Amino acid sequence: MKMHMKTIKNYLCILLFSSILWQCSDFWVQTPGSHENMEDFEATWVRVNQTYPFFALKKIDWDSLYTLYQGRVAAAEGDEFYWVLGDLLAELKDGHVYYRTPGGSEVYPFYPRRHFKDRHAYSPFVVRRYFTKELLLTASTSAEYQILPENIGYVFLSNFHDDYLVREFAHVLDFLKDTQGLIIDIRQKRGGNLQNVETVVSRFISSPLEWPKFYSLGALLDLTPIEPRGPFTYTNPVVVLVNGSTFSAGELTTELLKQIPQVTILGDTTGGGGGISANHSPETLPEFELPSGKRISVPSGYIERYDGVPFEWNGILPDIRVPQTENDIKKKRDRQLEYAIQLLK
Image 1 (tube, rainbow, N blue to C red):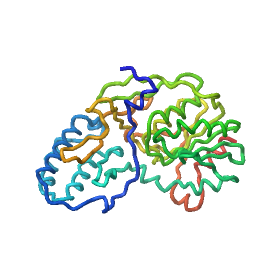
Image 2: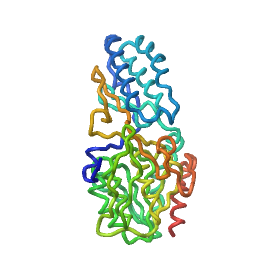
Image 3: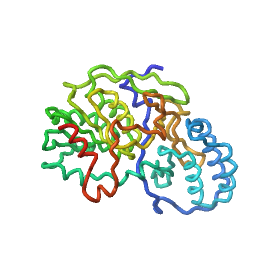
Image 4: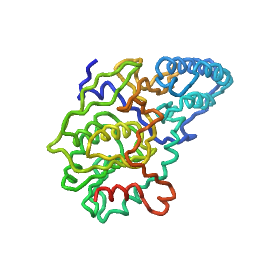
């Protein structure tokens, strides 16, 4: 199946990962509905069994979980079913998996360990201490950028959602084009779409770049290579900052940029979120509606790194590992940013 980049967004979706808190306001009290709950449980189990790609990788015995959770579902009353459903989906240990509450919120039952390790090991307020000028924001606030005193460009990409970077990244790079080096900060990223990823990567390559391998329901997808784009290619040295909270589309951007000679990946291993869902058929849609109308989202495909290792669980390794802790941030130090500045001086 040949897929052209201009239509990729219609076929392939990088699942989103966001920090959603459990809130009582998202739930309502209803009368026990054990029959409805059992139908939803059966539909969830079958959907996951038919589409989820990581049972072998994670050594998950999905059959045994059916028996374990069937009794809990039968005993659940009212909103207790949501807790049981959340526990069942958490067994997948997948940061892309979620269900929707009646209020419409996405609840993610699992967060990768590296996300918890690094979620407070970065602060935009500490980053601002290294600048003598106020950082600039794009209209959508998807990117924050400025030039450091050493004539080193800096851009923080806050998300890869919608078409923000497609519309705004060209202006950002034009502002930074005369710098002697560039820092791309994609720490704390939680997902997005391929068009934004392509928009960023295309400005740093001088020849076509193949995508890493994408699979949907076990079938390899044929993607058109990324082509150079824009009025100029940024060819000066680039450092990409990542950590354990860099996830999903942020990881794909990291892996692609890592293939470019002038780019160095610095920081810590990314979170490890390699699940995708192609949305060209009902079997691979990211969200699935249960009989009651409740919705779950489970990936049906995955991405491999260029070395053949899945993104999932493994993440993207930096070229230069510079660990950073919450204690560093409390001391108002960003050691990863400092290392990047020294590298580009």
